[in-house]
Every structure is written in C-alpha cells, then in structure tokens.
Length: 201
Image 1 (cartoon, helix red, strand yellow):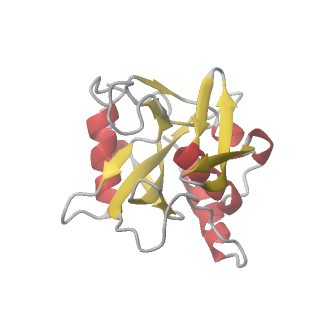
Image 2: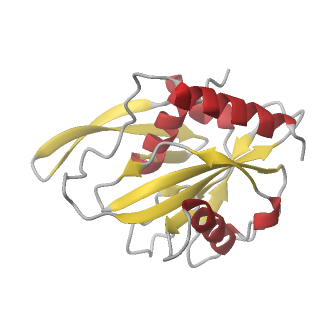
C-alpha cells in the first residue's frame, strides 16, 4: 500500500472540514429528542494504483433475513460497544463482517455524523486499505460485498434525489446505482455528505 492515497485523502478531508457554510444532511425521519445509540461505519477506500477506475470503496448488502435494514447496501459497521471509540468500533465491525485485518487499515479520520430515523447516531470513519485485501464475509451479516469506484460514488451527477413519505411527513433521500447495486437512504446520505467534504476530481 502506498502513502499517496492516504496523504491525498488526509489533505482533502482536512480541507473539506475546514470549509464553512455546509450543513450536512441527515435522515429527515429522525425526530428531535429521540434517544440515539452511538454507531460507526468504516468507509474503506481501496488503494489501487494504476487501476483505470481509480480507488474503490468497500460496501456490503445485508442479508434479507436480518431484522434491521434487510437486503440494503451499507458500509461495514454497527453499534459502538461500551468503552470503545468510534474508530475502534468501526474497525471491530469491519473485521467481524468482512474479516478486514485492523492492522492493514490506515485511518484518515472521522467525517460528518449522520443521525438516522431508526435511532442511530453514526460516525463514519474514512480509511485506506490495500487493493485486493483479503475479504472473508460473515454470512450471518453479509449477503454480498462489492467495490464500486470511490470517484463514481462521490460524483454528485450519480446521486439522484427522491421524495418519500413516512408517518405523514415528507422528505428526500439519495439513491446511487452502480452495476445493479442500489445504494440509498442512510448510506447514500453519508456518501453525499462526504462528496461535499472531499473535492475528488
């Protein structure tokens, strides 16, 4: 794994979070005063020097049998255990779900938290992992994993807005389509926020 991608992301993320006037989007279904549980996800950017599509990013589909968010595309992640930091929780979850060795993960930093309508306060952790890293999905938590180009996901031209209704309230959500995979809702919202923080060409 090279230093170039890590260094580039570190600079861009720092510059993005230094800007003023940007209000990160959240889940419009989240009601003020609702108790929130702390969670974290790992935005694992794969270092693929020379790849025609540039770096990738690791995403999963939840099994359709899961009680929460069945079948949806997501970043590896979940609830933060007592005594854990967001980074520790994201690394643990990525290991439990995809077998990603924490020793191979270079953490760039945290980005905008995302409050969900299901009661989670999610801290996304941006990190770099080697291209071709060994992946061993946990079948109880992962139905499939995929690796779209990082630049494709951050490109706002690929982020489509849709409107929905929930409990008599209306709001919008983001949808991103890539090779038959549908990324939407919370995960697409986190990506949309990140695309405003990282000025990726």
